[in-house]
Amino acid sequence: MSRHYKFLLCITLPIFAVFLVADLLSKHFIDASLPLGGSAEFLPGFINIQTVHNSGAAWGIFSGSQTFLIILTFIFIVILAWVAYAEKTKNPLFHIALGLIFAGSIGNLVDRLAFGYVRDFLHFEFWDSFPVFNIADICLCLGVAMLIIYFIVVLVKHYKKKKVESGTDNNSN
Image (cartoon, rainbow, N blue to C red):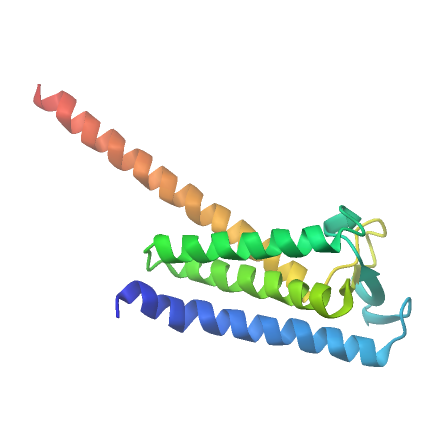
């Protein structure tokens, strides 16, 4: 087994499993503890618990389009799996990002398939207009940000390498 796949198994898979379980258990616990529309203090002045059923994506976009969102998520997961397979890196940032994105995508996909909506419950108390979210959403945001950082670093390194190679060629003429 190549080192790339060992990284997938040793970093990506555990990150995925831990955060998927955390997402699904937190949603279950909140559902069992608070009625829909209920709220409770969590971190006073910062985050409270507020149960919401979201039939759309972030900020309610595509509200009521569950079939579209389910198909889009499946397509996204397949593309991400291909990227995981094709990008043969041992960079931990890449593998942590993958684990987080897979956990977030599948956590919300499970909700859409099981309930027809996503169970959201975290709300910034200091930012009333910010949408209610869940652990899967946090995983997606962090994972995508980390993946963007990873690819920016890869592009910068590639650009610098090309610049050095072309500079070496110019100096030898």
